Length: 113
Image (cartoon, rainbow, N blue to C red; front, side, top):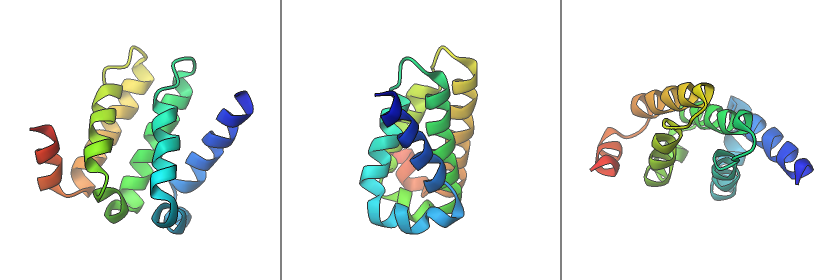
């Protein structure tokens, strides 16, 4: 299980940058599943924080790809904003701010209603 976490963390890091566009376009569902799994890691807050950082980078670099998944991403980011670990809360705040700046505002608002 620890090895799987390490691999998932590396995948999240690589796919969040500019060079990961092709990966996001081709495998967005699978990549989001890995990121969402990282957000649920109860044992390691650094994994939750890293997953949020990946969402932030992806929103900055691949907003068109993520626009189709706003309804899945926003509730998880909002939930992370209530995390007991301050660093995770801060990462969630940054993620939510980036989502608001980069993704379709109407879809974001509709998700919140």
